[in-house]
Length: 445
Image (tube, rainbow, N blue to C red; front, side, top):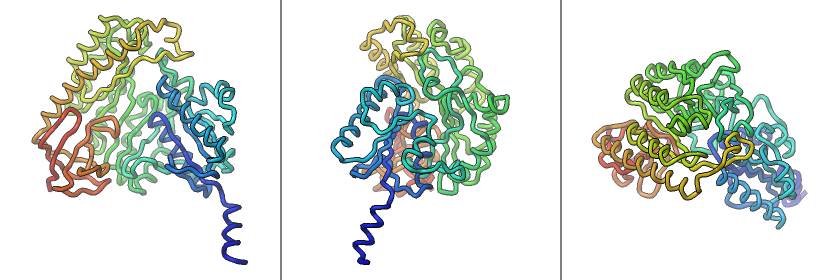
C-alpha cells in the first residue's frame, strides 16, 4: 500500500481535535484543565483556546453565568462558534459550565444548533458525547492552561452560604469537600511536573471539611500540602469572614511555604447592607476580624472585594464604606458593581441604584485604593523580596512576591537588559522604584 493511502486511512480513523474555550473565573479554569486531562488520557488531541480552528474540531465552551457582563461574554462566544459551525468551519460545538447549568432551556431554545448543553457537574456526560470514557485513574491529573510553575487548586465545590446577591449555589450546588488524601495526591502530581505554587480556590475555602470531617479542616489540609516536596508557595483565595478558622493563621506562621496572603471578599461594611446581603457578620465583627488577622500575622497581605450599588445602598452607606476603605488600608482590593440576578434573594428587592451611580461609586473606591497601593508600594523601596518569575514581556522579566496572586495583583518588573531570570524560577529582587500597582527592582545574589 502506498504511503499516501496509509496516511489517508489513518487520518480517517483518527480522533478529532478538541478545542476547549474557558470563560470566567479560576474555578472554571480548573474544570477545563480536568476535562483536558481526561481527554488527553483518552488519546485525544486537545488544545486550549486555539487561534486557528479546523472543520473537524470539537469545540467545548466552558461558560460563566455569574454576573451580567460575564453572561454576555459567554453568550457572545456561543454565538460565535455557532456561526462557525453553520459555516462548516468547526465540527461539533458543546456548551458546559455555569451559564449552561443556569439557563439550559433558554439557551437550547435561542441557539438550537449547538450539539449539546451540559451543567457544571456533567463531566462524564461531556466526555461521553465527545467519544471519551471517564477514567478514574486520572483523578488528580490535569492539563494545565496556566504556566506550569503555578496552578489553581480547587479543594471544594459548591457553597452553603446564603448571600443574597450570589447565584453560585444555583449553578454549583451545595458545598462538597474534596478529601485530603486525594488533594495531596494531586499536589504531588503537580509538583512532579514542575508546579511550585498552589493557589487554593473554592467558593468558600473556610468551610472546608465541615461536610466530610465534621469540622473546619483547612489547617490540616494546609499542613499536609505544605509537606509536599517541590511546593514552595501555597496561596489562599476566597475565604469567607463569618466563622473564619483562626487556626489557619497559626499554620501560616509555622510554615514558610504558606504565603502571608489572604483573599477574603467582604462585600460591604455598613450593618444594614451586610444584613440585607445575608453575610452573617456585622461591621464591628468585620473590623475586629481584620484587626485580629493582622495582629496574628503582622506582615500579611489582605485582599478583599467590594460591591457598590446593592439595592437600598444610600449615599451614607457608600460614604461609610469609602471611609472604612481609607481607614483599613487593604493591601489589595477589587470593586464590582451590583448585578441583579434572577432567583437570588436580592432579586426580590428593587434594583434602585442607577447603573451610572453604581459605576461612579466603584470608580471612587478604586481611586482611594490606588492611592493606598501607591503609598504601600513606596514603603517597599529598598527592601528585598523573593520573587517568582511568571513571564518575559517586552524588555522586562515579570514576577510576583508572595503577597501577589497572578492576574489580579501587583507585579515586579526586572529590566531584562540588566538582569537575567528563568521563567518559573525564584529570584531575590531589591526594589528600587514603585508605581501604583507595579514594583521595579534588580536581582541580588
